[in-house]
Image (tube, each protein chain N blue to C red):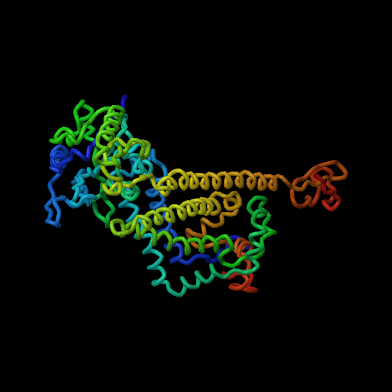
Length: 300
Length: 222
């Protein structure tokens, strides 16, 4: 199946935030009460009930004035996804379409995905004391996509800044668009084509990624790989070696003890050849009646 | 033979602590090992294993701390016993392959109430418990407040200590319950049940301690 993706064109985004509303509506997420903190950007951050938001950046222009840059902030659905890498229960996984799917029932609430995501997207909520938590993030509207529909944010986007389709087609479209705007924005760039093995949300950026609040070289932290690919195998190896060592010890020790048990002294009557097993010879030979003193010890 | 007569090795407080601590440890082990075995991940769903892990952690910490205060002098005495290392322990280390593989009991130098292996285990518990508790506490209470790198290092340290501990735990259970010599002699496991060992066993395995406590007395109960 062809991989699906969302293409986000920053030059077309007008920060109406209809995508935020549509996301809340489709996913039945409650609205958050917020206070004015000096910008139209709202809510201030992603949260367990806010899976997408538009980030507002003011970039000074060379000729004076300010360029208002709007950047989508949501799950990037990486191919090389740190969250999938570290998720211990398999709650996070790659869907056939390529995006990062999430089986919420399986989530144990460990929050490793929250710690390791290079875009700091997943949010978890719950009780610190009991540890009962659930992670929340954009689900790529998997239910809509499975029915052949567009994700809610794409469907609603009034200026057409969001496009949904086959990833290969969107990469081509994105590159064309980048070429077209490069006269105005020399550092225009299609973000996500190669990053982390290819993101399933592609960005047409007008400035270097940092200006948009994106890492220029996102990567799965080495620490995330170490945990599952080095530490855990090391642990299993140690346990395996221990069990093997103990098993070997058991076999050797039991063999030694059994050998000792069989090593019994035998005594022979010199007159009739009667043999007695035991630590000492009998008082008298039951056959010939000779005294035990005359018995000779048999060497093995 | 005075083989039927028994001497006390572990007091009630020691035995109760041992089994409560062991119970908590096994719960911690089971609810923690899910994270190392993704196919069993479904067992951790909806955080129930995290709740159990926390409850067991409370017992794991509270049991020794309460014991320390309830049984203050005896606890410190046991700790100092575990810290008391001498050349006899080097002898034990050199003799232990012959002992455990070839059941060569004569090779063992006389041991105190704790033999070298038991002291090593005791020390490991004394050293690893704080590591578990500190890193676990950071992950538990500092989840939303800590910088990522502290959280990550807490995971690593917690896991590395866990790996070493689980190996030592296997050795511990094996040597006390499953080893052919222990099954033959009915040694360590019984000591943790009623606290007692036979006089020949005490003389043979903890000679230094037996001599010190009972001296020239042939049989203490007579």
